[in-house]
Image 1 (spheres, rainbow, N blue to C red):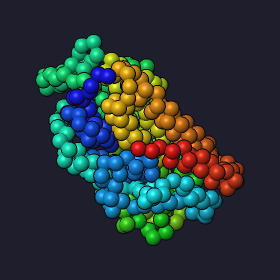
Image 2: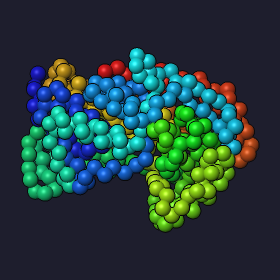
Image 3: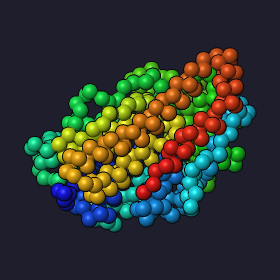
Image 4: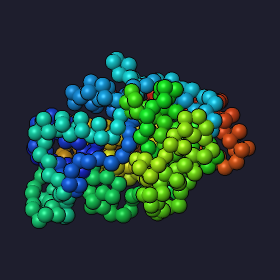
Length: 385
């Protein structure tokens, strides 16, 4: 079996950091390059299901994450005025793990970064791969002109991935969905104790608590692909989009100002079929798959990708190519479920265009939401480290 001694990880998000930690923990020398000048991480919050928490327990950082975030075991679906339609208790966790722990993106990233540093991962900022050289693609040239050789290059370099471009070109990648996601971190009202959705007409609102005193509010709705909203108008636009919702959503909408930390992003879901490698260059995380946020499992899948890549690469049988093929096969199958389930949920909620549609959706949720989400629970929770 060919021994893997030195790996380049491209991209310092959740998946890249998890790959770096998992590899370094197993004795591999890891360089991590990040194109940004620092880790001033954008974004709002991330729900972390029990499958991801198992990875963090392996890394020795679970307690810090649980202490920082907000743990919960249920989700609720409401109408626009927050009248309850359906409630679900998650079938995940146990053995010291909650079903979910949500926390701010910056908090999760900082915890992973500190752990990677403590293990000896070498970081280079403002750096990205400019060229993959040699028959395996692992003799790389960086954008600063420097060069280095590796046994494997692992690309966790996000939705606009350079590594994915090397592996599959533009054959697979992000495509506009016509749906946008608005998010803002706000103070958590006492009534929000778990994940919740408010199904509306032409979109939904909802909230996820990410600390004892904070949550993030979101609004997922149709938007023109490619639309760029002026920063100074975001608060006005979000107020307009939240106008149909009552309860705390209306109160938050009323409080928005030009200084409110509103984040908007278009949903561009995709998944690359396996194999996820070419030569000894492999991809994972957002480079290989972007899913709608309906299972709050995007970051969790990236964390799993990084962990499984290290495990199979270093303990699997056969050649490096065999092990990378096994990784892609295993991870594509799991991510394909998350992608398909989340896309279907997105389609269902965004098909509500009238009061009659809303009445029909409420009836369907009351009958089926609990059982449908339970299916996802059992599959998500099947991951073991």
